[in-house]
Image (cartoon, rainbow, N blue to C red; front, side):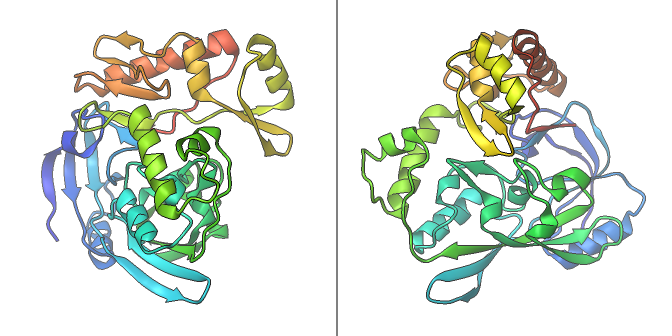
Length: 332
């Protein structure tokens, strides 16, 4: 098991910020992962996936582990359902494309979300009314402290909106994820823009839904290879009834979605745009002019410059509307 020293992390984060990892390893399976964890028990550790959910503001004085487990495997199937397992290093959209081509329903609404399979349960990624936790049955891991292999059922993952036990504790390295998908598909209208993109087709196929979502996301979101970014930067705020009423008094057109328990989700992009930041730029960092939820890098390799701009956006939205936006992206 090869361990590299003083590795530049700029190629491994989608914001392309510079930082050096003192130690760096890419284990190809769970056994190699256990070996590397046991070899460096005292080192500070960071688990790095495809790098779309974090960026660096300084060097990392410890061990960066970038799991390299790949493969998509059929576990079992019956007339109605199929269960499959994918390695943590598999590209997320490649998995979605594979499931759609095979006629398995459940992940199609999550098309073109950047990142790896291993990151999907950490963030509990979601889009167009669907969250990945609805399809996950098992998450396989290796414990950072003991090097032991573990498995977490859906209930044990403690999933919530853009959150999970893996995000809260960070003491597990995900090696693979199991998904249970349907062999039949019925489109349920949840988002007007998706239905509009489908051109009022009330019975689209899986492929048609995936293609429509790809078209929408391609129009709205910048390509990280051309304009470095980490996708949606902030969580959509969850409001109490009192907070909702206060905000509606300031913004009568505020988009609202009920989430149960007398809570309401609103749009972080809407708040950022209303605060005047859509398309705004500070030096080499800014908000994307086509979608206010995207922070973009126009050429800096300094994570501190990006972090400072993020803080400015948060403070201005809070000053105007009393809502503190919470990042989805980790800042190291």
